[in-house]
Image (cartoon, rainbow over all chains, first blue to last red):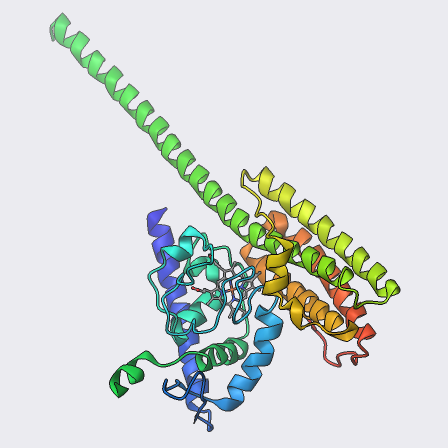
Length: 158
Length: 190
């Protein structure tokens, strides 16, 4: 049993990492990498593609808006600032045990893996929603990224 | 060979045989318990996902309650809203039963005030605002159900698809009431 699930894990890890590479390839070929101001002017934002962010915002509303908002907890936790943050960190949201115990920072790669198959990424999570299309994941992640500030560059700026 | 050793060796043979029987039984127990834990893990995973769907239905029911009592809607629109709310109550009841059958505790609803805050109900100024909120929620719910089907156990695939169908029906009526054009491309949801 254990061996089998290990094999399945490795196999899905390979699958997942290949889809991550595919995503990077899309990013690299994007001609328009621009800076977008997110919150206040003292906090440097992540570099994002403005075009992808606009697309991501529309998709976010349709695909995620049934359960999530940026500033209010609903079926799922609020999302503003989730990019770059530890999983399960919105204090007034009641996460599943799976997400509370998930030792992961939300990045391009971890968000991508999560959206491909959340119950495989964190068995026992209450989010079952999968986003099949890589372009949609890519745009939505870019949108979430535009709403966070980059911790490293803000630390350097001090 | 002495009598004693005969007894001993036959005893050993007996023990050996029992040993084998035991290990076979033990194996069956281990396998059985593994199957059981796999089932239990699947059931608890389904409970989690179904409970998120219950939370979604609770929110939908509350949204129609807030809309119906907002004073912003024509009486004919209130009637439609109350009918849609009835469908969401039907979904909730089916999902609650499913979670209870799996041995879980169904997600509870929040207060109406909490939903009003979460949905920013105070920003609704007229009937079109209310219809747009309802449309966003219904469209989001149809997409949500379609996207979670592959994570659910097969027993719940059809019912989740039926619920997505109801939400898509609601979305179509609401989009029409708002005068929105019919989408040109196929596969409008999911």
